[in-house]
Image (tube, rainbow, N blue to C red; front, side, top):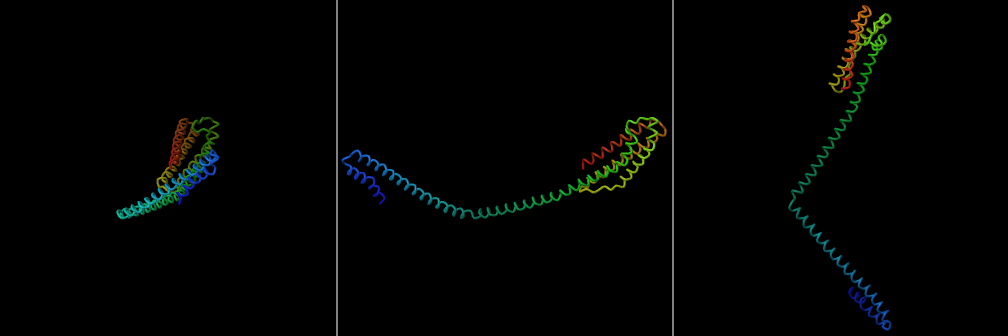
Length: 254
């Protein structure tokens, strides 16, 4: 039926046109040529579309047949492999769950450790504040009685004004040492850090024992006016500075 329609359009109509305009051959040729071109395009398009449809149907059928064939074949040949794959997947899922649980535990552990860290820092800062607060009781009188203890100049005016101040500074050094002895060292989360904190307290305590001895030498100097005590004062103060530096360095290591 389709090809009969094509023949009708391709041949019958041009012949009818030529017959109708047989007296005007030029016009008949133009109309006939137009019909032939249109009909040729229709025929070629029709053939091309039909070919494509057939190829599509054939490819779809082959794909379907191959899929069904090889799927069934693989199921028959490898039932164990299929089960192994399922087991492998289940194992991987289980491992992922274990890993997630481990990460969550580590996170919670670190989260719980943060307040401890913060607490240790707060304890150390409070400890240092207490040390410095106690230290000021002796440090201020020492500075007032001798503006520069390491380069002390001896004269009658200095001796007269310094006697009471030196005695007071000596008493304050002894009081500071006693306060450090009674001072309790706070516990940190790490035992080693607690030991370092206790050691740092011993350093600063020793520093004020040495400064108390420097005040003893200063009193002897004021009484005897013997310049040999100037060297003793300087040496005691030098040694006390070393102990203070040890205190600072130990605190930094915690």
